[in-house]
Amino acid sequence: MLATALVPEALALHRLIVAEIGRFPEMGHVLQQAGAGIGHARLAAVLAEAGVADPRWASEQFVTLVLAVPQRRALGPGPPMDAATQADWAARSVALFLRGIRG
Image (cartoon, rainbow, N blue to C red; front, top):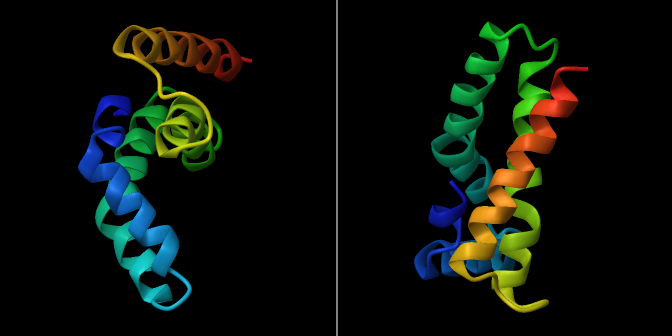
């Protein structure tokens, strides 16, 4: 998930969406339904099977935890993460999420 979000094409699409969402608000809805929404639904289903009380919320928290900082750094503020740093970030994010979701 992290590697896919950080490819140049995905970053370019992200920049475009942020730049144009004010003029084309329906674009955000379409992209949510076709892209991130599908991923959240799949992850939420897994979390629901695991007994997580609010699986949709947990899914959104997980994705934000894994993606927000690496994506922001790849878009410009701060140095981009190299592959080793991305892998470490992802592993540590998953570990933190799993510790927290268990209560």
